[in-house]
Length: 202
Image 1 (spheres, helix red, strand yellow):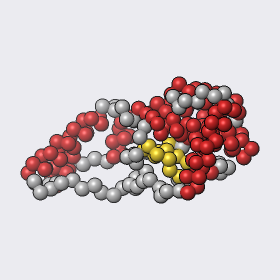
Image 2 (tube, helix red, strand yellow):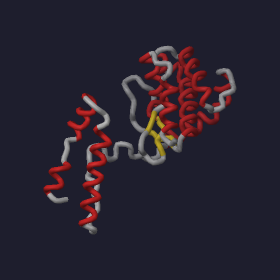
Image 3 (cartoon, helix red, strand yellow):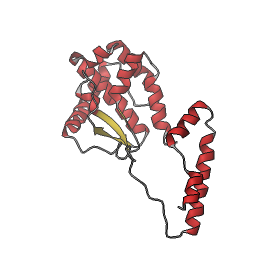
Image 4 (cartoon, rainbow, N blue to C red):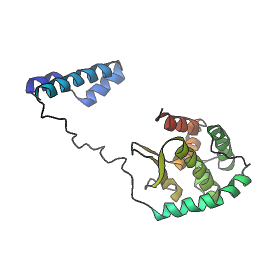
């Protein structure tokens, strides 16, 4: 791109975001349009040119981790035991969005604190709850289970089992969703996370 055109269009991403936060979000579409026009103009006069993606610190952030036998074994175990878990915890767990509130209430009743959800004595219940929430997320948006080291101090191995979007644009951990709900007392957290996850494909 010619120096003159670059100077007209150059910007600092940090300053742009600060400008948005301090004043007006409407600046984003204006800046986007300006850059789009500059790229089109440059491409029109330089037919052999094409934009090149430069590496940034965020590249590879959401890359899918390698297969995990630990995860595979955990999933097989949860699938095998789920009917028992469901029967023990009220039955009628059908993976529909309407059951999220029931799951929230169940988790709050059985493991009302972060310490309780981390307690090895509650592992069978917590594993079943995380598996159920994860399967809801998987059914709601094209994604698959992955294993990624993501534990905070005191977290069980279950905290590493997450859902990754099929396009690798993001991931979510059922254990962390439930743990965060308990830590913040935010009972709407699981519902909000589900709606945001599924809303991404609409």
